[in-house]
Length: 149
Image (cartoon, rainbow, N blue to C red; front, side, top):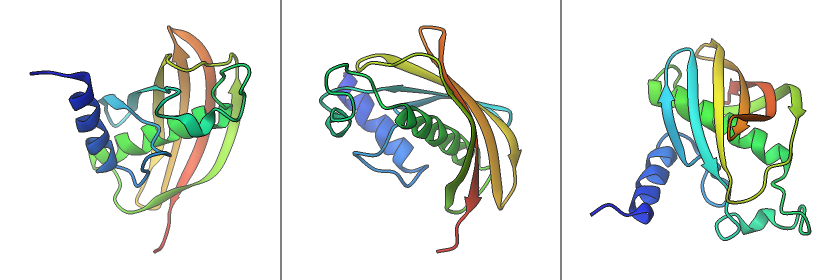
């Protein structure tokens, strides 16, 4: 029998097999689609599951903008790993063209559309946009580099 709780557990387990992030810093719920050109991911922040974020804007209920960008980058990384386009441990090394257009509140589904600009064994360059109900709320570009352990 289908239940949202079981579905969430399965999706988190799948995402955890793709990127090193874990609760409470895992900000991807689902990768909806992934191709060599584009990755689409979903995240809904909740006050109960993401309580550590509540201190940022306690009176407004807004999710911190940089967490939205981190979530977008996690979606991009999960998609790259899902496709097998790069192997190894990659870390965020630079961000550029970061813009915020509207605040996002809890219990709102965020759709991330991430474009793969360059993918190699050493570097990943991506750019992405975040939407809430088809309204642009944030955009950024970033580079991840392979880190030596």
